[in-house]
Length: 495
Figure (cartoon, rainbow, N blue to C red):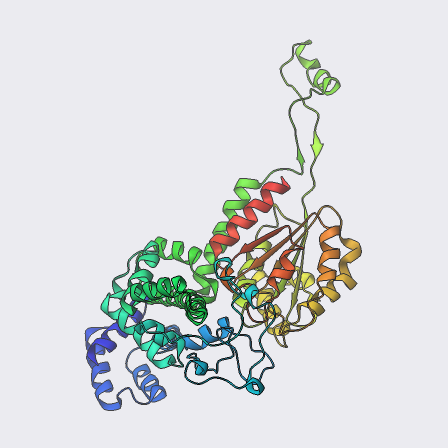
């Protein structure tokens, strides 16, 4: 009990909430009275003895929600590895098993009239190494400890196993962001990854098709679990990193997933964004007329050197005018990707000096232009209004592309660069790829930035594989570092 509270107070101190030893003792006395059973009661009780100012209380609320929260890991694993299709029972291994992960067919044959529906092109949702077509049918039972957890509905046990493993490797001792991979591997090893890898290798080598089906499903779920462990390590670093290392924290905020940045860190993240913009401006700031040296402008050179009695001191070269690109930013601002849209728009509109022609659009279902909103308001206010007014509704990329074609197709030319930010999850609606193809043909570049990891592209309701065909450049983009690199490339091409 005391260890958990001490770790929570440590997190508060790292978030710049000043807590004295006397207040720590008061918090321990409070905890003895209320315990951990009622979460809301614990939150209210500790808020009476730990935070003092209004800002402290806001930070306290954010820290408490992060520290005393547990994500349903297993639900994400299930969602990424099955199709939420219109079937009677959901297929988790390409074999018609029920939703508990362990195939009921392994215990009793399934009658033909009870077979669940499977997607015809199931292999599109897995990585290239897992594209062996095995058909539907039985799968074997996992034997390793981690494999059994992954293949059963054990969300609580899986979450507890990850938390226990993190405690055993002292996750709170993480000091620099570059240790994220190290701690992720240590947690996975503690959870039983080595035993699981050996089991997968044996299953792949087996001549039994049910064994190889199980190997495919275990590999899928292991990839998703690894991503979840990475997210957990990132959040623990944000929660426990030393606040005095401001430069280290800023470097972290450039690399951490934007979806993992809490509201209390927005102001610091904005400062990082403005510094990135200033850096990019200094690298790329130049007049619209760039001089391409190589061919001498003789008349102008002679005129400019008449004052020197014919001596040639100033050489002038023929110049080529290079226009800045017309940038169209199309942002999915639905709840799952709103933070990514927030910081991309912030970075783009901070680059007005070197990228003046920006038209921005926001959508979750219907698309709306918000360019004037950014002209009339400061960046932060405009972004807040954009997310407030246009983030509702069911995500529909097909409708958004139709609206964009209706309003902007005639404005597109070979100087136009289209930046699309979104996860391409279309809720199984019509993707209308023919519209994106038309935009692709009329524009200089179409850049798609997807905040999801690549192994998730094409899974579930994602249309990323269809959209990527009509994109000049497709990038995984979920951090400020990714944004910085992509915008830097855009400015290099423009200049």
